[in-house]
Length: 254
Ligand code: PGA
Image 1 (tube, rainbow, N blue to C red):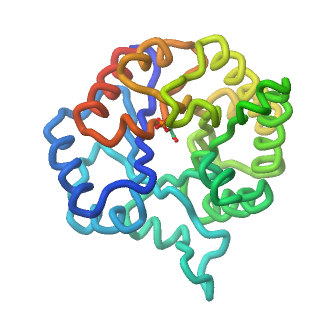
Image 2 (image 1 turned 120 degrees about the horizontal axis):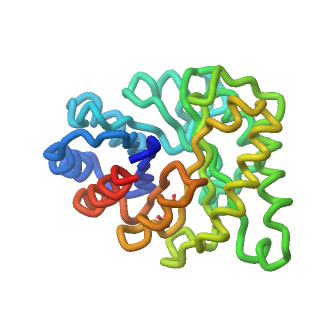
């Protein structure tokens, strides 16, 4: 156990309030893990209910899967940073590939969301990653650079703890095919260099970089052992408390 790891569960559009509470009732039977930060990103509805029911163990931090670009107003369907915080959440996903590629969120919109999240006191988990087409065209660095620069250039951070970056190759999300160790190390070091350029070496070298995309107990030990990896952002394998618990145990071994 040499570094603090983050194990983050992105529940996407899964789990009713009741299902979310059942998950936490089971997860709460576990001991608080040493040197592992555990995050869960439920849907907004479950998020609010979980905090109200005090269903979440103290060693789990909550996050939202999205956030508005404004603080309040006539923006039907949107949820502000203050509302997210009032539900007990401290993190927010920004630029998850499903929002970029299915919902169609642009780099410019994500920049606004990220700035609004930071201004509202939330910790953004900025997700970046290339599609298979972009990888095959040799454009990984160009795509990741663009995503990082458009979201972060000129942003001022209070410290390394106020931002998390997740590398999630689009072709690895929900496909069962995870990026291999060399691919992860290569892109994570690219991200690390960019962060150091943007924020200086002290902050840039201390921002946590997570890997996401078909993480499961069978592959997480190898991924978590990579020097460039500070944890995982996990979709499918975060939905069952037993499997998610296995991932927490694996991270605790690092
Ligand atoms: P997956 O999803 O673990 O189901 O591939 C990861 C994510 O979308 O964050």
